[in-house]
Length: 144
Image 1 (cartoon, helix red, strand yellow):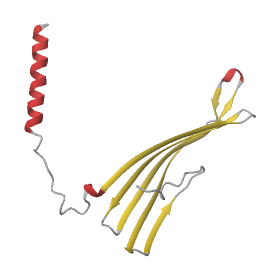
Image 2 (cartoon, one colour):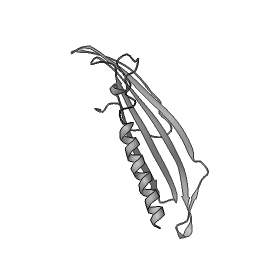
Image 3 (cartoon, one colour):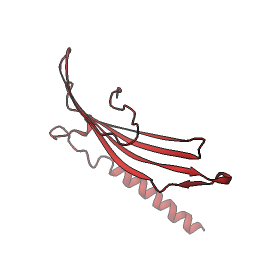
Image 4 (tube, one colour):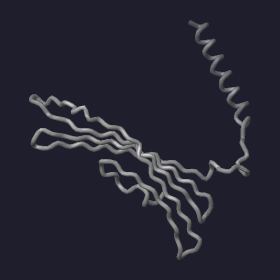
């Protein structure tokens, strides 16, 4: 037992020592890159909705969205939303048994927006949105 503890302790100490030695090993210089990762922000959101009616029919929908925002400079930015959507319907049977209707659907719905603001009173926006058979909330027009 002492041998196992000693070996575990040596491995743990060795790991910490090498982690300290290699902490400053790789520091990339982002000054001359086309896309600077320091100008990129990423946020995530997830929503789930379900419901049923008095005629024993129900539905479900889940949406995972990855929000990416890249600020080229103070006048130009690019926003990208990747929406991963899953939805379908169900039928409620006796004794609270739930049966799927074999209509489970998954989709990826992208949206993007390019904003250019050359002056305080002028803003030019180019935007693409793709909506599916469901109601996706308006995710682009919020402050990031």
